Image (cartoon, helix red, strand yellow):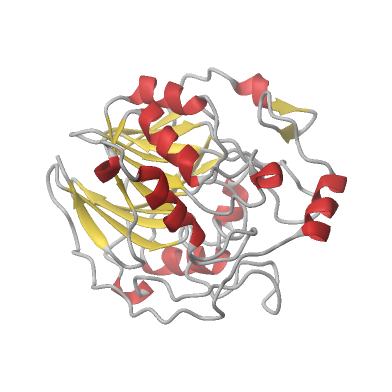
Length: 328
């Protein structure tokens, strides 16, 4: 990493005022659900099946580095993915905690262990954070990463103070369409369709986003946590070629309520095509019960959506701890 604790961004801001008003961020053109909508969902919930605990042995220790244009992707769990290419190691939304909640005694808890043991991680150079929800920004994990790896962190607007509280020193927060130069490559903050909150009182006070990392043989796109929107096509147009897209496929039921903020598997298939990604890997499923789809529903529905398609081999479902080489 560089010697400075603050990265100086080089950016072009295209849409700033269009997603911020009266101290809060919002999704342009997407109505926000009301408190009554949330109550309706809670009254009418029909949660799918989740085993209390799913035994799953950890995957093998990843290589320390992957050199050159080779690209290896390892699915750890939920939205946590290890990306390795050109001698760099990056983690997306790292979560190793047992529970994703402001308190230790209640809230969503994991149904399976992380696919990679924390102590088996290679040296981590950078972290990409999509937003401040507890299942994406886990402070105990970030504190441990700060102590043992001291990586650079890229996060959306308003999230940096929380990240710095974890002891991370090299932190850059960006708005949609801003770019920060890091190790001679651009890291681009891109739109997502979601929301933010860590308490009942701070809803949408910080931004949410996806990320595009420039790479020699094609860019890497981490969509974060998002509903379906026309921004996928714009991201693909701006950052082609996209070699790999990490796309969420879970927490979509009931669709009338979750649809604005979480894609269905069918929409993820369309998002890959719109972004022009050569390959995609499904994320955001199988670890935490956050909506009404069952543990096995997202991958099953994705396989069904891909059945019979000419491009079905372009969208992978990886087991927790599984690492694969992405074709060049």
